Structure formats: C-alpha cells, structure tokens
Image (cartoon, rainbow, N blue to C red; front, side, top):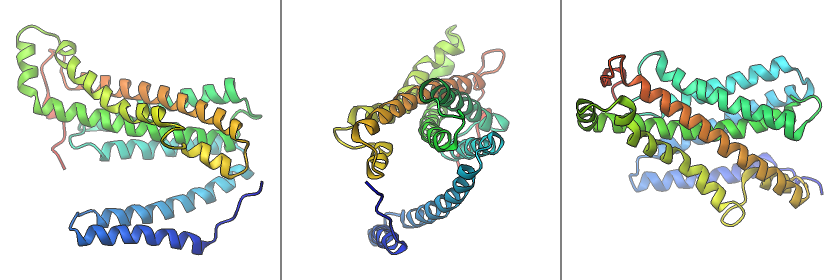
Length: 266
C-alpha cells in the first residue's frame, strides 16, 4: 500500500478549520484566539524546519549530528517546562531541575529500546532514534511541567501548613510528602489516561501513522505497545526525579522553607 500524498492546498484547507476556531473564540471573547494562531504558525514553521533537518540526518546517519539534534530537543523541552510554570525555581535551578531528569530518563530509555529491543544497524539509525526520543521526551516534558507547577504552587499556597509541620519536629521530607505525592499523581495522569484509552477511545499517533503508511496493523500495534511502555517509564522517572529535586531545593541546610528561591508569578 502506497502513501497518499498531501498537497499544500490540502493543508491550507485544514488550516481554515483552525482559523474558524480562532474566529469563534474571538467572537465569544475567550481570549485564546491569539494563542491559537501563534500555535498554528509555530506548528507549520517548526515542523517544516524539522522535516528539512531530518531529511539531512536520514541521508547522513552521523552519531555526532544525531547527538546534536537530541541535545537541541532536550534544551527546547527544558525551556518549555520552565515557561509553563507559574512559580519556577529561580536561577540555574529552574532549568537544571528539569533538564537533568529529562536527559536521564529520555536518553536512558531510548538507548535501551534502540540497543536491546529494536536493534537497528547502526543502533543510532535516525529513522528510529529521533522519532523514539521525540515521543518519549515530549511526554516526559509534559509530566515534568505539570508536576513542578503543582509542587511549587502548592508549596507557596500551603506555606503555613508546611512551616507548622516543621515546627512540630517533622523533617522537610515528611512536611512535603503529601505535596510530592499529589504532584506526582498530577504528572502521571495524562500518560495513565493515554494507556487506558489506547485502542478503545483513540488510536495513538505512532500506530495511526504506521497504518496510514502501509505497515501491517499487528506490527503497528507491537510498536505502539513498546512506545506506550517507554513513555510511561520515562514519564514516571522524569517526574519523580524533578519533583524530588525541586522539593529539596525549597529547603536550606537547616530544613527551613525557602520560598525566596521561587520566582514571582509571571
């Protein structure tokens, strides 16, 4: 089965649907018209640029260039996590507490999938490495952003309760345990919902793309199961590492709550 090509007029027709949505939101004074249009424009520009980059990477499967692409993806994901928080950690910690968990979880699990499970030759073959890393990293980014935003916002709102627990002799870990659990739960809700709904409510993106490109359905299903498990593991690991690191940063060596380490809300 060959892929049915799309023309630019087909994409323009699809874009009119977003324009209609933006017009409707403007008429209803929802305040999201500008964000919708900017998001749509960014989608077009970013995907076209990525398409050009991937074309070059696929033609020249160099570990150096693939590593550079992967590093750029982590840097952009880190910036997006930071931008999505209402009260991020100030200074380098605001970026580091996201970058390290994203790097560790995404690169580790993607490498395991490439080297141990799929085993392409070479193992860093860009047709496999970049899409796998992108899906894992994108979901981990969402989880870390949700978890950190809930943790820092809740810590600020419940500062009186936390300080009361500290005054009663609890350690910072005990005082923050409830907030950390709630933040982790919020971070993992999207991936849990995605796994629960996969194949019943929706067909996941990778599986849909493979089927549209002519891959046998059962082969597409096996790849999708692998991806869902990788995403779940990477999401959980990244969220737990980020939440733990941010929670520790909110306290000094004398276990005093230090909300001055948070930036003011934007």
